[in-house]
Amino acid sequence: MSVLVEVCIDSIESLPIAERAGAKRIELCSSLATGGLTASAGYMKAAARVAGIPVYGIIRPREGDFLYSGDDVEIMLEDIHTAKQAGLNGVVIGALQADGKIDETIVGDMIKAASGMGITFHRAIDHCSAPFDALEFLMAHKVERILTSGLAKRAEDGIEMLKEMATFTQGRLSIMPGAGVSPDNAKRIVDATGVTEIHLSGKTTRQSHMVFKNENATMGNGDDFAITVTNPETIKATLAALTR
Image (cartoon, rainbow, N blue to C red; front, top):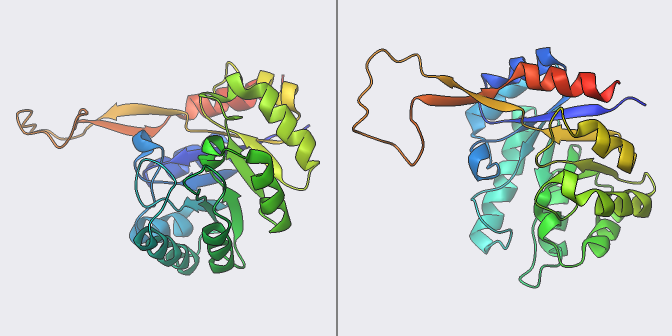
């Protein structure tokens, strides 16, 4: 069985690296350290221009929960329009109510805005109080797939729920495990669940090419001179593991 590997990235530098390593779809993000936020318009356009594989842009206006204000929703709808105009193949969306149920109104509006594009429902499903009701709604609205850890911290720990989801959807919607996927566990997750897609970042860091470094002035909590990029060897090793 062939398994599609999707790689999430947060820089244009990582896109050709992931593609050459064997990724068959890209989830385009900024700020992977916070779970992935919406890419800028310029970044979306650049990705659409250079990619030889499908690119889906995450639509997530801020870090934190998936309970969105009216302003958040307005931003997300505009960002979907931007992704469509930029030439992206699809979007990655999600929203919840305060009680943890899927927000059918907001998600429905985003699905309408993304008409003509592919749609993935993101890991909001892992914070959902009624995930199978959410799956029913998403299948009825022809969403292609959900990205999920099986409601666990890592996909490897959510295998039983992933199996239940795959059985429940019966191929009407793809279950794509993500969160902590690596060459060491990808095959076990796939073999145990029967899924046909899997998602990972496979990220590493490279050192900045700056010659001058003022290390007294910092831009945040991390190392300003360590740049997050896709590690091609991790992607290749994952693909190799899946074919064993």
